Image 1 (cartoon, rainbow, N blue to C red):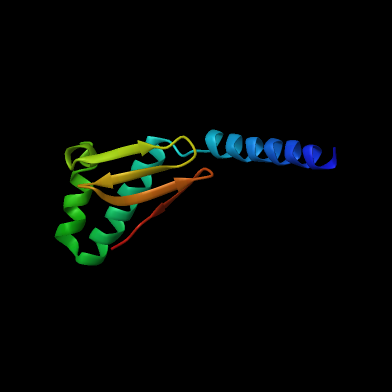
Image 2 (tube, rainbow, N blue to C red):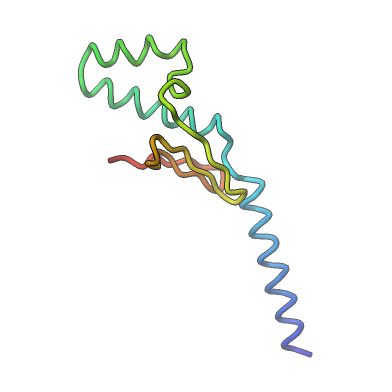
Length: 99
């Protein structure tokens, strides 16, 4: 009896954790915002003209034109470019995967 009770508790805990991950999975927009901000920071470090290019691309959805793809795995998500992971998101937070 005690073993089956603990098994039920583990299943309930697992369901709660899965629900938390599912409902806090970052959106496509959250990934794009984080990736774009990272692109702007890199452009500013590389110099004036790169910075100007990043700002002018702001009006156009530059990330869409660059072939960036959003992938949702229900419990987490990623943004990729040419098969390489650019951002990873889980629990409502997005992290940039830098070179």
